Amino acid sequence: MSRDIYFDNSATTPIDPAVAQAMDPWIDEYFGNPSSMHRIGRQAREAVELARHQVAQLINAKAEEILFTGSGTEADNTAIVGLFELAGGQPFHLITSAIEHPAILETCRYLERRGAEVTYLSVDSSGMVDPEELASAFEPHTRLVSIMTANNVVGTIQPIAELARITRDHGALFHTDAVQAAGRIPLDVHVQPIDLLSLSAHKIYGPKGCGALYVRQGIKLEPLLHGGGQELGRRSATENVIGIVGFGVAADIARVEMSRESARLVQLRDRLIRGIVDTIPNAYLIGHPFRRLPGHICIGFAGQEGEAIKMLLALDQEGIAISSGSACSSNHATEASYVLKAMGFDPLRARGGLRITLGRFNTEKEVNEFLEVIPRVVDSMRTITSRAV
Amino acid sequence: MVNLPGMNCGLCGYRSCEEFAVPLASNPDLIKRCIYLSDNKLKSTHPGQKSTEIKTNYCSGETHQSCVSASCGRQSDTVKVTKNKTEWRDSLDRDFDFYLDQFPEDPGPREVIIPHNPMLTRELEIQKGEILIGRPLGMSCGCPITHCGIVHTVDHRTGVITWFVTGPLDPREKGFKDMGYYIAEGYEGLVTESRVDIKLGMRYFFQPRRCMLNWRHSGLVNYVNRTPDGLQVRVEGLWIG
Image (cartoon, rainbow over all chains, first blue to last red; front, side):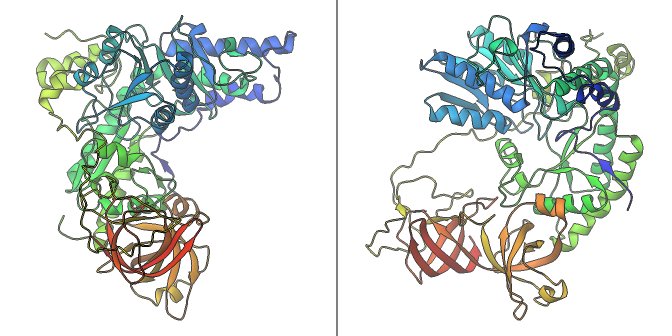
């Protein structure tokens, strides 16, 4: 078996060769500390500031509104914990959704232990937050709303502009975790009145270990890291120059290629969905039919949900990497169960999702190969499941 | 004629709004593919069934009846006996008596199993530390989920294996041996939270803490040892429900 198909682009993406090429001289040739005053340091500073501009352009922000972090998770934490700390013990209510990434949910739980109040909005069966429910959730002391732009498990895209406008009307700040969405769908922090937005480089064909937080001009956050005062005192630590350079180039490519790439991925995605649903009678699409990320598919197999792990392993043995919405009694359990449960799935069906996420380097040939393999794999499961499907 | 938003986002499957306008002219239903224009319309086209809101259910204080009325009168020092707790309901709203936790030093819940064909233990040359997958079939447990785990001990004479149930990452990354089906014979673990005092020889409903389906199980407690960490128990004669 020589096949090697990577359909797990929501977990991470391979580094684009152009990104790797841009990062290469910063590994050894240019090693300066951006805070140094000499020429070698200034070179690094220029590179970081160019990347800041490139990342800002991706969401139509100003360069000075971009704060580099070590990850998307750190960006989320910086936004939420930073605002909580700034409140200095005043009543703090924040609103989020039940299907956020653990980087948000676990941070909210941490703040609950520290006295914050959190409202978790429900979602409908396609994973959508209801703007009316948000509008009715505000309290006098609501300071922040945090709702992801697109969900990492089912790919559903939220009506972010509307949610952000409602939040602004109620005098709170709006944060969105756009880690899955950035570079895949257009984001404009002015058209969509977003105050804080989290990004991650490795989801857009950049390196791991590099994220960013957009902070609208004028918004103050208590920093999580204290030290040398880098990033305008908002995140002390010597900048990850190599990663930041890669992030900038990755953002640039994503912005330029977005519409063409999205259209291509939507066509591949819909072809894959049709191919699966038409040939496997018990297959069903999870999530919204259209309001989903371009390359994102979440699919279940009725009556075989318990075998999701086995399907994943069987596909892995066929050289196809996808993700399961399930994990078995694991410390490493994925987030699928709570997302699908929040969407109204019963506990068994909530374990049965397979996540197939296409990306820049996937081809029609790979989609065709997958469509050849998947009926065989699903059929092989029938020997160990009820035939009544 | 619909005014398209001019975002040229590609999410409709066309590279630009201009391109999209061509098929849209002959098939107006395609408008649902534009997420910017169909925000509200889609809700009526695809009515999402509202899921149950996440909320905390506070216990009414009623005493739930379990399969066993266990009241030996001797309170354990290490087991917190809590009667009025909403957690004593599984995902199907059935009551149970205690949570079964894994031992802290174990990588996952400890389970005593036997492959449905016990000869497999020898045929597959199953050894300590190896990764197995299989599904608990039949009367013993009947869980529909394929389980994955790491072998702790093997008895090649009887085919009985003790393993730690972990997750799919290990088999995916390191390979695995496939048992097909197995029978879950017993669980070993710690009880730190219970709504009854647990007695040797009694059958209880319990919830394995890491059960993915949050389904209650029942079983006979045939080993009890009070330790500073909690009540060590072995539970056999397992059923789900």
